[in-house]
Each structure stands twice: as C-alpha cells, then as structure tokens.
Length: 399
Image (cartoon, rainbow, N blue to C red; front, side, top):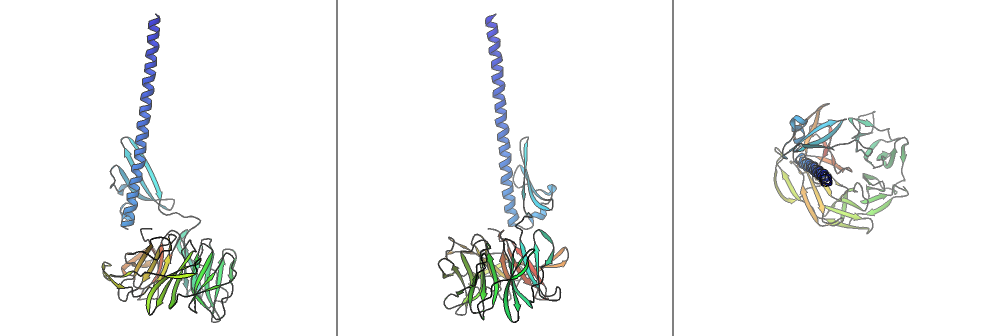
C-alpha cells in the first residue's frame, strides 16, 4: 500500500511537472509569435514610409484597407483618416497571431506651422494674412498695423509672436504682434537705415538685411537695441537667414565681384566664412527631367533657408528653365565643407476652385524660401500669366 501511494504521488507530480512545462512552452511560443508580429509590422511600416517618400502617388493608391499594400510578406499597410488625421496603419500576421500598428502622418499640435503672406487687396490696404496647419480651411487676416502704408516682410516665432516690417512715412519700422496684445513697435533702427528680409530663430534673436549693406541683429528675448554687422569683405548682402531652431550662425546669399556667393556668420567668432556653390542643374521645361549639371548657378533669387539640422536650402531661377532648389549638408555643424544635392523641380500648383488644383508645368520664379520646425520647405510662386501667388509646401525627403 505504501508503494502504491508513493507511486500515485509521483505520478501526480509528473503530470503537474509535464503540464507546467507545456504551459511554459506555450507561453514562450506565444510571446515569440507576438514579438515576430510586432517587428514584422514595424518593418512593413518602415518600408511603407520609404515608398510614401519616394512616390507621391503611394498614398492615393493605398487609401483604405481594401487597397492595402502587401509588399512585405505577411503584412498589409494602408492609409486612412481617423478623427481628421491621416494615419498609416499596418496589420501583420504570424500563424494564428496578428497585430496592428498605427502611425499618425500629420497631427494638429500646439506647435502648429504658421505661414504668413502679404496681401494688398484685403480691407482696402496692406494686410498680413496667415494660414495654419490647425486650420487648413482658409487664410485669416491679422489686425492692421497702425499707420502702415505697406508691409515688406513678416515672420513668425515658435512662441506664436509675429514680426513684420512696415513702411511709415518713407521709413521702415519693425512691429511685433502677440495674440491678445495687438501690435507693438520695436526699438528704432539706426539712423538712416531701413531693413528688409526678416528671419528669426528660437525666439532668441532676429536678423534683417540693412540698406547700408549690413546685417542687423536684434536680441528679441530682451529687445534692447540693434547690432549692425558689416557684410563680408568685398561682398554685397542679398538675403539673410537664421536656422529655425538655432541662433549660433546666420547665413547669407551674397554677391562678390558680380558673381553669386554664399557666406555664413558665427555669432561667437564674429566672422564670416564663404561656402561652396552648387553646380548648376538644368531641368527640361516640359518634362521636369534633369538634363545636365554644368557651370555656376546663375542666381539664388528664390531665397535661402536653414533647417534645425543646419542643412542649407537655396532656390535658383534660371532664365527660361524650371526653378531649382538645392540642399547643402555640411560635413560637421558650421563646416564650410559638405555635399550639395538637387531637389526635384517644383510643380506649378494653381487653385482652379476651392478643392481642385491644376498642374500643367513647373515653377519658374520661386521666391521667399522658408523652412518650418518639421523640416518642410515653404515657397511662393507667381503665375507669369496673372498677378496671383501660390504658397507651396516642399518635402525635401531626406531630412
């Protein structure tokens, strides 16, 4: 009887141990398959984002689960609109296990992007209008600047303030607009100097192009007084800009000896240094195909902008050809050595109606190139056959 009892106890122990081992084995297998699903979905999303950046038609072709992309084996990826947001979704399966991942492609946040433009047709006088990613329905007008006869330039900061250069009795005056506080006049400019081409970064300092061929800098966190910075030796300043989130350096389109040049200025070193120019790119006006790269860029009239990583963008308007946007990536921050690349030509978007856009050719006269804190470029284009302007967003792709 004792032997039977002992054998029965051992049998129960063996069954329990076997059950426990089987349970652990199933749990490990479940966790393994769940992990496989997750990483498969992540890989599919990464590939979909690559396709999305490489081909603008990818989103339209894969909107909704019925049109899902199945390039990654075992996974489906598609785009859908959820609560007014564009979302990339991916469903991956390994055996009986499946999982879904979602990535918001555009969000409305407190740090939304504002685009400012100047209009002469609203309210019977000079007007500053804004468009925001939080409200893509329409442009909205800011209150008028007191006594202003014209508005020459405007720029917004990451805190929501807006700075604008307004004409007053033949002089230029800098104004700041703050929501709920209206327009406030900033410190007077140096005697006899007018300014144009505002740029601001990190709500720390503002720069502008001075009529005396200087770069004027104003520390906007304290708003004390203007500092005049002389142009590079032998050069004429044509355009100046600051990176969107850094104020260590300023950048300028210049002209030296009748030739277009580029310079950067270090605020700590208080020195200018010259940057290399890109080789001119030539696009076929009819197809937008790059035909050759040769010679020097004819001009950089379209402007200059610098993103948060220090990458420089310049826009050129070759006569009779599509405009060209170039991107410069320095080898190290602040270095004058680096690599240029050419962005595709910009389609000449035109609104035909409230919800229809017409594209028949490529932009030929870009101007006022800007960059936002998301690394996207903004540029204005005027239809050569009319007085209408279009504001165009450019995704440079590799940011």
